[in-house]
Amino acid sequence: MTDSDSLHGSRNTTVQEHFRSESVARETCVLARMIGPVDTFTDNPLDEMTGLAESAGTCVVGGVVQRRESPDPKTFLGKGKVEELRKMVEHHSADVVIFDNNLSPSQTRNLEKAVGTKVIDRTELILDIFASNARTHEARLAVELAQLEYSLPRLKRMWTHLSRQTMGVGMRGPGEKQLEVDRRLVEKRIHELKQDLHKVERRKAREVAGRRDYLTVSLVGYTNAGKSTLMNTLTQAGVEAVDKLFATLDTRTRRWNLPSWGPVLLSDTVGFIRDLPHNLVASFRATLEETREADLLLHIADASNPAVLDQISAVFAVLHELEIDEKQTMLVINKVDTEGAQQRLQAVQNRYPRAIPISARTGLGIDLLAQRVSESLSDGFVTLRVRLDISDGRNLAWINKVGEVISKQFHDDHVEIHSRMPSRHAGKLMRDGISIEVLQGIIPEEKKVPEPWEDQLPTVGTNLIPGEGATPLPLPEEAAE
Ligand SMILES: Nc1nc2c(ncn2[C@@H]2O[C@H](COP(=O)(O)OP(=O)(O)OP(=O)(O)O)[C@@H](O)[C@H]2O)c(=O)[nH]1
Ligand SMILES: [Mg+2]
Image (cartoon, rainbow, N blue to C red; front, side, top):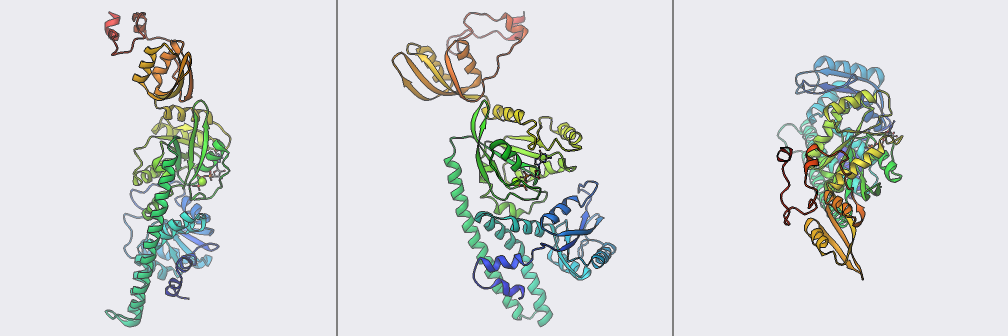
């Protein structure tokens, strides 16, 4: 069956099968990477690609790395390196060469000729892993769209090449006619997929909007950082958490009962990676709806990985691409139980001093994480049930003034008010001996040691609300005089 044949026939399956036949599963591979002047890398620059290739089911038998100012326009690597690659492929009888860079269609073709085997690039490999891990209908649609978009320019060049070989330059041979048919088929399928995904996105947006009663926290981070493990630790969700890249390709949302705060929704979603293909990010828009609407992002980083700082930057880059980098975000450093993690944690905290160390596996640091999330979500607000004496019109007016009254219920001798207000005001109610119950949020602890100037404040009338007839409090300097 030719590549062209596989594109014809009924929709869905044939187009998909065309790409599945390209899968690198169960093959032996040689890795290749060019490192440019601005690229960062660890002791073993092929570490990440080895993990990706293994996640795709291949067996890595060797690899070459070359540092260059810029790629060779024809073969990406220099002549000598390509020859080294060819020998390595021959020696191991490798089935495929996987590049940790993105290649142009003509570079791929030239390299295939030079090394005598199939060559695939980083984007194609990532798409392949996504394709084999996609379980849900939505993830399958997203992956198929990204794969077809990736293939379209390659499809064109492949057929131009073939038709020229058989019919000569400038002739419109059967190959080119075939190409037109194939292109139209692929474009039609891309159009259908975009429409289907748009419908999914609108449905998701409605679902997410329907959950507005709860604040939502979304886990984001580099793939394999431990997001799903943390989700399981916090909510007993039972989602798949395995040592595999891109294990999660959908979004799961669970209730997380935050101690001293109340229930919030926690969502776990697809992981990110350096240079995540742009069209893949775009096609996963619907899956990332929860993340885009979240009240708080927990950015989970992996302290067991020597490249943790680069991974953090890569995640920030994807968040920027998703236009959610302005959202309130807390950096969480996971796997601090692993060897060498303390040193890496230190390096991360030197750059991000507020990063919270945890181990999703052992539970270390989870309490502190919950407390920080509570504080951040409260963002200075609490929701209270307040019981006031029926005759206490003054405090009723005050609550109306400083906060929002959600509901009011009058009883014989008291009134029960459900209110949201800045947490610093809730302290005043407590000081006044009014009965309150905190439904959500945290009331900050009263300062134990007063500032020296506070001692000098008048003790009478300090409970008056500013703007309600109170004499302005003296400024610290004035009080100290
Ligand atoms: N030692 C250690 N291992 C952890 C910890 N948290 C997660 N892991 C392991 O890291 C691997 C990846 O965990 P996952 O929770 O699947 O990671 P993820 O971020 O959801 O990954 P993707 O869904 O693939 O993006 C698994 O083998 C986990 O057991 C931790 O705190 N300590
Ligand atoms: Mg996961």
